[in-house]
Image (cartoon, rainbow, N blue to C red; front, side, top):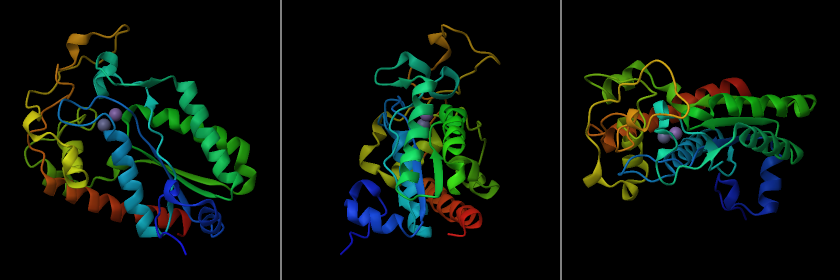
Length: 255
Ligand code: ZN
Ligand code: MN
């Protein structure tokens, strides 16, 4: 008797043993604990990467490993930076080691197809390094790893529906229309509609400063307005990501 879930953290060990023996794709959501404005919870990047992973895993018969809930350092120009209460920043070396160790352990239990789904902008190269080190250790087993940022799958068609007027760019889309819409679709009870920020986009210079300037970042923590967020836009994005990421996963892993 199996639970039928794709979520590893809800499986018993015999269930996981039997499932992993069939060599499914194991998805690893790479999130963060980071401020997302006054209207969204700190775990948006973890929740959304896990939700996209679950959608795709259901589609291709995969398993979703427990989400990495802490991420690489939030930066002022893409996540608001370190100024806000609750943002927990890992050093790169910590996250690299976590990704490497988790993949190595999954391989020890039989995984040979791993797909890291990044849900936090600053994680991208850090997760890549963890994967590369895991490949150096485990490549001889036949391990293959796919890595993606789910928003890169957003098509022109979806973009037009979500941003009929103007797309501010993915880096400024922090706690804004995309993430707020996806949260409204997936976790409506976690969105504070009365607190949705509506202010002009942050206007960052083309360089960084250390220590960073707090005044560069809008005081809400969102980097542009989230006012145009809707549940329907969230549904459009999630369904398109589910479909198109599953196509890519099947192509690479014959899953
Ligand atoms: Zn985010
Ligand atoms: Mn983030």
